[in-house]
Length: 144
Image (cartoon, rainbow, N blue to C red):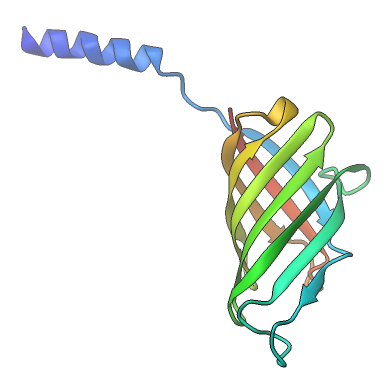
């Protein structure tokens, strides 16, 4: 009898808990305005601040769909920054925070949004499109 009651309760709980489906959204950032304020005499110092405001394009990299702006603080010389930025698209904004690595892809947290993105969470994966590092795929996996 206990097993039957437990199975009924488990089934009821699972049916009331909708799975969080991630909305996939990809944009391409053109990193053309990046500027770094150095706190030391070296070209790369812990505490350096990188700022930007850039255009973002659709996944095909053809049509401008918005902008992004933000800042990163160098936390590990030669390997990582800690970043915070906002991507503005039609209908709202998506806020992001987390580490940006000098090499390889970076995965950051989506911390919220406005407008049609109000209440979102999830993550964004950054992927450099070419070795120059001036275009990045932002692959958002948004949960509502």
